[in-house]
Length: 296
Image 1: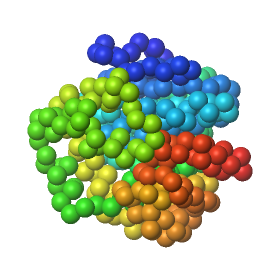
Image 2: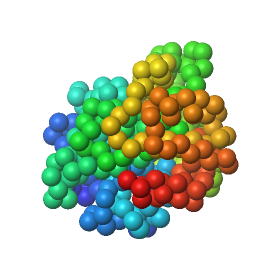
Image 3: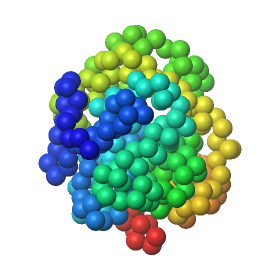
Image 4: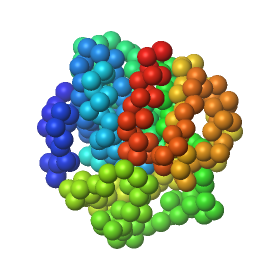
């Protein structure tokens, strides 16, 4: 395990949480993660949404780390990740699920655990679609599944998929400014406004045209998966669904039907939250998550 950050501008650092990298020959670049908490405790893997990064959990990681070991990766093409350039990592949900599986193995080995030591997956939006695929395809690696505003039940506006498929990345790059950032994930955060250095930490990676193109195409695949929502089936793990009642991105009105389709153990809808409960309502989010995990 290497603790050297990428040579370009490092992401914003926060107290009580550490930035780490796990070596990977398969992807010709390391996995970049933030980590906190006691490694002797069960691991929570927190996964962010599209056009976000590990900072999306900034309002909850302090409290969660009092009870769990946290592993918070930057997903491929997001934040400080560099593995997205690998030929082994196309911009597809199933490919990112394989990437996550490899990361879990690397983390376990770094902690001196068996490679298939299971973890709790807690994932938002895009991350939830990836986590669901891992739980479905590699169940031995998962203890429980918490899906927050899952991307596989997103509303798909007419033409949105084609925009993400064909929008030229150099053109989209023109919107990667503090003002333009309001058009992507953080626009839907109703909690604390990000500070200027946090905004810059979001914007800077997407000034790389290759990275931005990868993120756009991955977003198109996310919408493709959402159009196949009826293909969602139960997994073999305790499954927790969390929605924000004010979410205008996913089909909150279908929450009960989605919970039935997944045979979810628990469904929670936070009345005052939008698309990102960990950002909008951190106290309620942690309370719900702790209560769910205490029964597993």
